[in-house]
Amino acid sequence: MTFNEYINRRRKELNMTVDELVERSGLPKGTVSKITAGINTNPKLTTIEAICRALMISVDDAMGLAPAASVFSMNEIDHINKYRSLDKHGRKAIDSILDIEYERCNPVRRVIMRPYYSVSVSAGFGNPLDEAPEEEIEIPDTPENRKGDYVVRVSGNSMFPVYQNGDLVLVEKNARVDEGDIGIFVLNGESFIKKQGVDELISINPEYPPKPYSSNDSILCCGKVLCKL
View 1: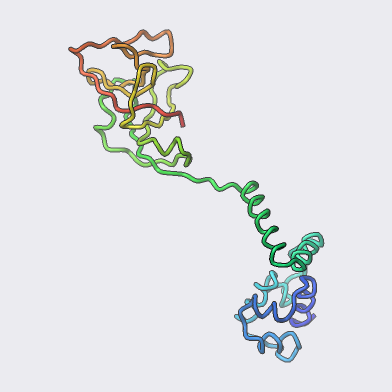
View 2 (view 1 turned 180 degrees about the vertical axis):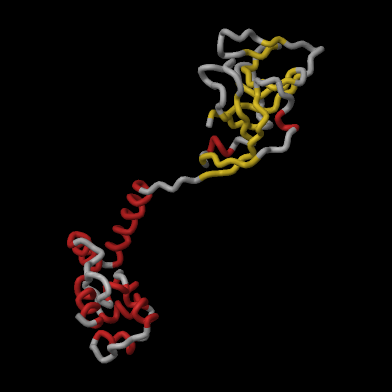
């Protein structure tokens, strides 16, 4: 099968006119007409590539370098032909539904970057924010996560079962931490993830007693824990 015979057959499969092939390929109408009529039997490679893109076939197939086969099933070709028969309103309706279903079946994973501090909380270290962030890490882009300012790692099991050893938590740096909220605290130079109590820091795990503090102690709140990552 010659090149012009192949592309004419493919054009008919797609119910595509020569004018539509001209429009889709971006080639001059005279160039396309000579090829489809079999007058030009030795077109340039760039011309062949443009026609193949318009017909959604490979150059190898069109030139007989690979077994000729449609890239569409008969069911898909039937859908294409039906789509081509629609008016502007009908095509717009189908395009809208197709976009919605494509996004549903192929969700895009959106992420944001936040600084990660390698100093673990509840491990006896000082203020994690005194250290330079080790790196930035990707977290899912959600309205809640956008509030977070940095990420630290939990050490120990004083907040088990909500937060376990090795968990990464997202912290909002300047958020208000009320009684009952979980935050990152530095008490007398040691950093902790704890629940805010009345003049004390409370562990969720009952095996760990509260850590009381008074006006004689140095305590700093480094932010509110938003979630576990």
